[in-house]
Amino acid sequence: MAQQLLMPKATAVWLVDNTALSFDQIATFCKLHPLEVKAIADGESAQGIKGLDPISTGQLSREEIARAEANPAHKLKLSEPKVRVPESKRKGPRYTPVSKRQDRPNAILWLVRNHPELKDAQISRLVGTTKSTIEQIRERTHWNSANLTPMDPVTLGLCSQIDLDLEVERASKGRPLPTAAELGATLESAQETEKLPYSTDREEEKEIDADAVFAKLKSLKSSTPDDDEDDQF
Picture 1: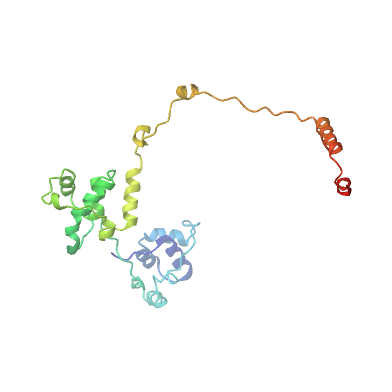
Picture 2: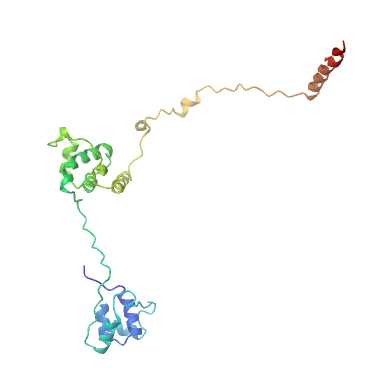
């Protein structure tokens, strides 16, 4: 991938304010029109844009600027980046090592049985297979269908647990909620529950008569013989 200048207009603002480069040199380097660079220098354009120092970002060296200032015909060149960012891989079926390709049918069978919500395209992304193979395993028309054993693709190393969870989450979105019959629920309707007998027999709290209690205690105390007198006889 060809290297590109970051924030070209902000870089042009900085070069206009901090260097003696010509408008044509700045325009060529920042891929702008010379008249636009002149408008920046005159304050007619990019008034709210803060200049970006290309030296601090590592896109231009002081030596390169000095060479361009000394020679108006010199064209500025971007500095080589110190860190190379790898290009993103193109989207497509997952590559499966040759040593693990024989395990793909077992992984497909596991996914079909344990995650029926997954679409063929999702299974294909997870284990790197084709839709025709998935269809054959679903319909048990695969040439080796009798010998297949469901095996977790994560355990087989065909995909990661994160990828599997992500695909399952995507497939679950938008699905209708399971009905009571599917969940095996046995809840009765409101009409049925209203017919159930409701017990209202509760022990009524009796009011305590304090005077009666104290009178009974006094009678018990007066009727009790003195233990000391009994001991004397």
